[in-house]
Image (cartoon, rainbow, N blue to C red; front, side):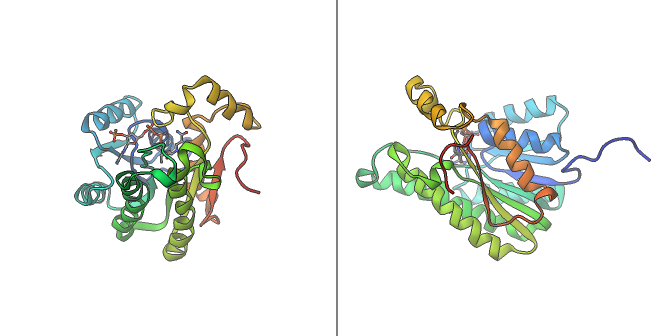
Length: 254
Ligand code: NAP
């Protein structure tokens, strides 16, 4: 009998969009550390190459390719390349999102509204449509939403409304894909990443956010990855259609 401990995701294949840095990268690393073969992607090939090199240097089984989630051919290529290489998909994490404008909803341009819909919501639907035929029995889909989904406010209002829509998408797809595939969401609080640096680099704003958490700190990408790993694992085998808030106790919902 071997003495090596079986890891959570040994033999599993995970595809993660927007995973060359920040939360997506941390999820990729965590799943790979737990034994998964992980397919990394984002728009820029050089970012993909860099992320793959970093994880390979840790001895992890990763493979990467460029995929702008709004481009049908690149999504199709992401899924086909994964299936050609690994045969199936056990975990799909839809992580890509943009925040193209900090304008109030009433004055937001049509271009910004279209971009929010195209990338944050429509592509989240489409990546699941593309992957669905290849999802294995006992597979898991996870949407990365946001704590702002529960309280759309200020300069993040319209972005947050798209995240609120992901809560509904999570429930709706959980019903469509059951019982073969579980569908859940993670709702991060504020995490210092490039995406959020216009907020977290502002000392006053940062302190205000930290003070609203019970744990008196921002989240880390590893905090988010741990929650995603839990939901993707068999430890969460009776959880579907739910969204887990990882917000340090900041106000979200009852
Ligand atoms: P990040 O560190 O800035 O990373 C963004 C990643 O997305 C990069 O790898 C980027 O690479 C990729 N990307 C951007 N547009 C893309 C597209 N159209 N198609 C594919 N990849 C794309 O951001 P993050 O903070 O980790 O955000 C990740 C997710 O967490 C988002 O859904 C965000 O809404 C959510 N979130 C973040 C926070 C926070 O405080 N950070 C809080 C709540 C929720 P390329 O430039 O190479 O494409």
